[in-house]
Length: 217
Image (tube, rainbow, N blue to C red; front, top):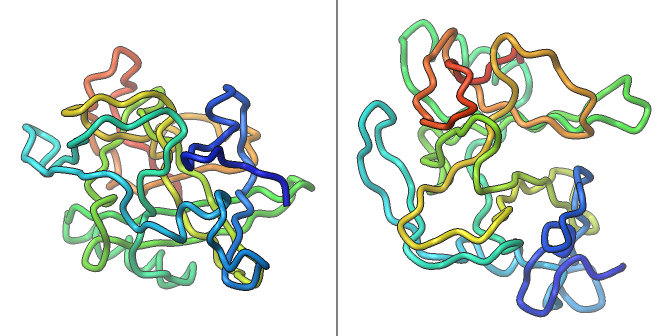
């Protein structure tokens, strides 16, 4: 397979400012390299850079870079409970009824025909990693969420990469998806981290639309 990463493990499409929405194809245990080449950063490191957590007003616990992170670098995966669609819908209804904050992420990969989508539901509310503390930022944050598969794997890994140079002490954010009142665009992939109905956004961006993204599962 062609090289997607440079020798430092940085994603080449991001380095060269190429719009890239397809699922990544990483090497894995079934490849001739046994997953040890440049094309497998998410397999070889669960968390690439040190991250610190601290409380921020309105947003709660937030994540910040504890070191410089270069453009295109793999940061971590979004880990949690993998749920079927019905279970994810039930879980979201429970969270809404209890007015409970949560970290339920839904990733839709639009098929080339445009008529169907593959969905991955990950709930990191109880069982998850540090990525559940990455907050939303309207207009796009400093992280890009991409799916990744290796040969023999049906379920993708959901990976976060730096879409620009990130400085030490900077908050780590990504766009959860479209705002509540936005039209669904014709993207090949759409990330929706589910928010409670009409939950206000406090990202502080000049492009802030006022509310966190949400769509029905």
